[in-house]
Amino acid sequence: MWEGLIAGVAVAAGNGLAAWWLIQWSMGRSHQTFIAAVLGGMAVRLALVGAVSLALLKLTAIHRGAYVGSLIGAFVLFQILEIALLVRRAKQQPPQGDKC
Image (cartoon, rainbow, N blue to C red; front, side, top):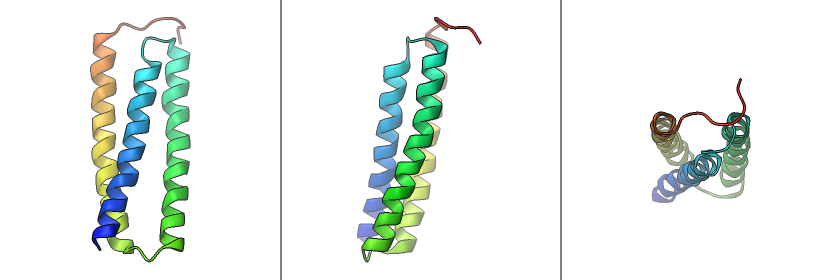
């Protein structure tokens, strides 16, 4: 069961780190680049989380409930942190470049 908990948190943490990197990379760039990086990155990250989860659940004997529960819990936590980071960064930096 512990393997499932650790794997779920690890997958969610990898997703969170990728989100953080995309936010850091896109800040200070044009609005269009920022939106493309954040929203496009979200789609790619979600697909990767799905693929990794499917592989882990199909190819290993990992405890399914522990994995799914810890993945969802950690994913929600990292999403809250990602949104807080975006809001804080938006307040610190005025928009630059392209206008919507």
